[in-house]
Length: 346
Image (cartoon, rainbow, N blue to C red; front, side, top):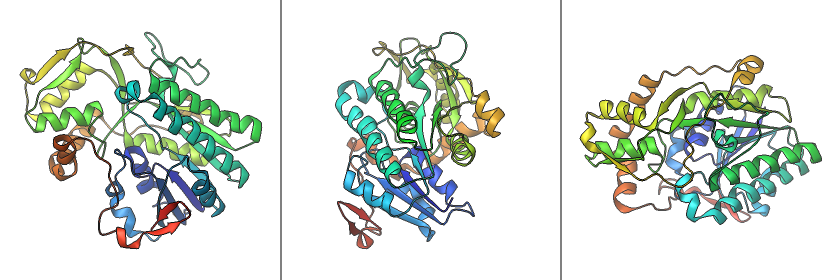
């Protein structure tokens, strides 16, 4: 692996992956393509900018000219994180989710095949399998998404896998359970609850808080994605789970304890539409074939995450008090931005 192109590399999971892969001795260059929409923060890349391996491009995966120019620059591998990803937001913005997640993926896989990329990893979610009241979904289970976000990701998965079958693109798909960790935008449940509790603001649970999710530390997911990038068999799907199953109420209890709050800070509200009761995936394929094994314990990971938000209120307080806003490159980086067709690079 000489040159890795990472889409959505300024987002939550993508930025963790960039900081991981840039340390690899066999990686000479990492190019990040990110549109810096409301959930993308160039600050997430942090110390990675000290590496002369990193190149940042401000652009949209749906922009065929920018994507083609980047693919022509010679990446040997692509890891595709860029996506609209918030379930609640997807109810009222389904068109944006379909456009970015499906059409954007199509632009990427077409360009990757045209320029002869050696490996393409499409990053997806366990939500494409839909609810599993008992047992766990394997990679061969049918896709039964129920919410607009999951529908768009399932469609993107099929676009990606179709590029392997019809175009011969050496591509793998990863599907992970719910990720948590530092740098996550405070609209997802874990950072939302932590930032509210730190401010003394009540948190809300849908229905009775009975919905079950598997919580996987973001660094464990990134380790699995790297394993798939290096050793995954083209055309295969790999589930990446192995975190801890918790109901939303159980998760809330952990966060209350960590933040020094009580159950008086919790309010119950009506359930949202199509709130799947339980997600569960079987990750034995990645374990047995790739040696993937999560290393983070939930209690330590939650405490580390809460502490990051406690110490970095300057990063999230403006978002929670002033509404959701678009983020751009900080002033220290703006002078070095130079044009790259319809994108911008530094």
